[in-house]
Length: 78
Image (tube, rainbow, N blue to C red; front, top):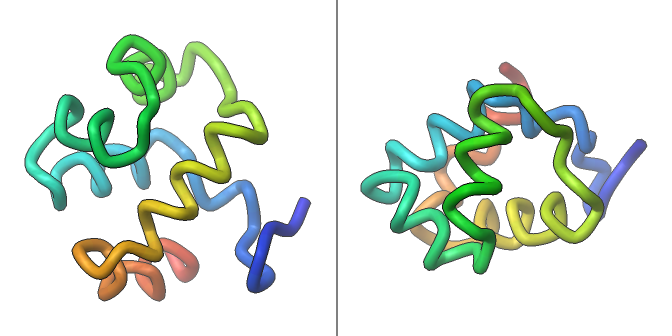
């Protein structure tokens, strides 16, 4: 499945979400930025659930934020 700008929805595996959280200062801060519940982020990190379309959109929007923009290419190519 392809999202906006051709970014694959498969980009957001637990490893990538962890890198996003690390980049912004932790899971709690990523929760604030993305408006995704902390518990949902932890479940995604543990691989217990797959992200919903809404969650994927929120993660993609966070990637477009200037604080994560420099990592977009790394996420796509990883």
